Each structure stands twice: as C-alpha cells, then as structure tokens.
Image (cartoon, rainbow, N blue to C red; front, top):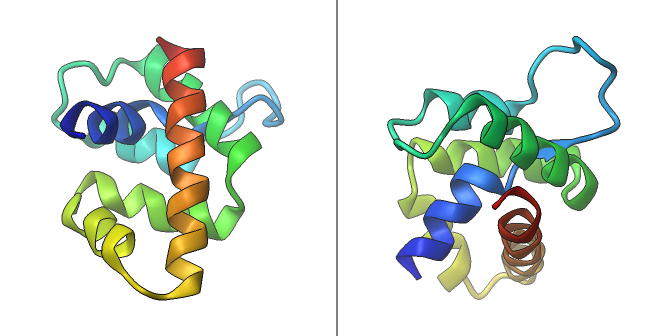
Length: 103
C-alpha cells in the first residue's frame, strides 16, 4: 500500500495534451516540490501527462494536495461518500496507469 501511494503520488499526475513549453500542471509542481527522492523532473512530467488523461481538472487539483498531506488520500479512501468513492477509484486507476507508464 505504501509503494502504491508513493508511486501514485509521485507518478500519478500529468498530460500529453499540454503544448510544448507550457507551464507545469499542479500535479507536476506538487511532485517536484515533494521531498521524495524518486521525484525526478522526468518522472513528475510523466505523471502529469497520465493525470491529464485520467483525471478531471478538479480531481487533479484535489490529488495534487495529497503530496503535502498524504493523510487526505486516506480520508477519501475511507470515506462513505459516493463522490469520494468515485474519486478514489479514478485515482487508483490513475496510479496504476502512471506506475505502468512512468516506471
């Protein structure tokens, strides 16, 4: 579980739709600012690309906050709210996709 959260938080956030030279997305910025040793610029860019394809803008904004406060991911995971359940399922799928795509 710890590996999944780390991989998803470090890799689960980015998109190929952004034009070249575009400003980094919220997930890429959060990834780069995290103190995780695996959070290289290339990995953070890859995660943002996957996030852009997998999550809505609002979901990316929410998930980006989990880099600095991972406990919030667990709050959503354990919530009984349908909205939180949908977010968690999409986030989990995003994390799996990012792990496969970004190494």
